[in-house]
Length: 88
Image 1: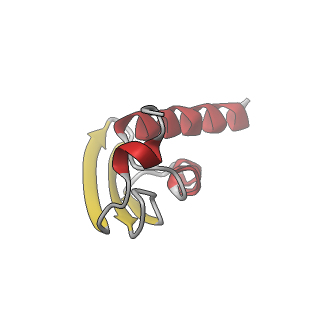
Image 2: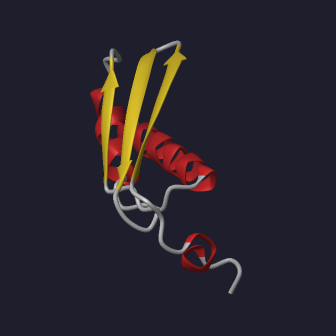
């Protein structure tokens, strides 16, 4: 029961959150938009990186997920694995 996200978060207000991080391969800015129940309804990602597939996969993988730190980390790891498998 207590591990159920709906029980823990219930109804949440709509919100936006922005991240920006500099990596050796470029800067990435992520804008997250949630309109209901803590789910990521939409995200906008901007980067000066030449790795466009990273940006596309990250956007696809984030949309529809519940907004938690663990989820964000899991999505980033899954995106990394996707991109690495495509390069093999």
